[in-house]
Amino acid sequence: MAQEVPATASAASAKVPMDSIAAVLRRERGRAGLSLTEVARRAGVAKSTLSQLESGNGNPSLETLWALCVTLDVPPSRLLDPPRPRVQVIRADEGVTLASAQADYQAAMLSASPPGARRDIYRLSAEPGAVRASDPHMPGVVEHVLLASGRARVGLAAEPVELRPGDYVAYPGDLPHLFEALEPSTRAVLISEHN
Image (cartoon, rainbow, N blue to C red; front, side, top):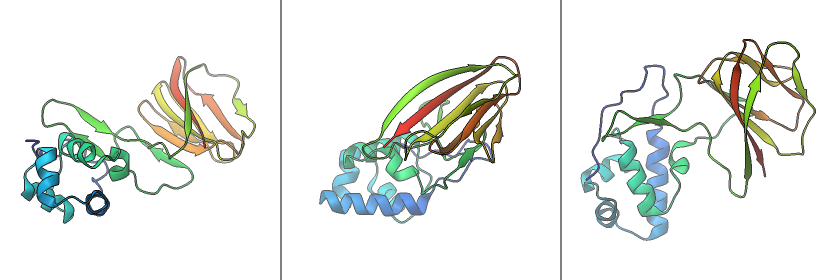
């Protein structure tokens, strides 16, 4: 059976959105036409654990939520990804983080793929100097940047944010935007999402 574990993420990490998780679990269990007992059995979790989670209580481990998602045939992002503002910044020590019950391992979801979206992934290398200014892309494009090393100003041209290693930002790619390395050997991952 999957175990519950104490949260070991940084104090700055976002709290697991238990109200949202509870609502999605109840809705998806009802959609699947399964009883609490049957979902718990199939997922390999205690019925009392599932009952607590559906009530908005508890501190689920990564394994518990994963097992429930597999049983209910829903992506984990549906449980963890609340509605987001147009521009979103997640610092390296922030974000909804789940800890494993089996290893010293944590997973923080930064962004869920919307239904029907296509994502292109790029590895970026940049040096200080000229700013990489981008004209607007096609309507609906969203860009996601995760800074791996160095320091950079990234995002909408009118209001870029400074990122440090581990920081994440998402912004509309259909508006003027930029990437400016502030330190040598700045590296990042860019994901361009097309709906």
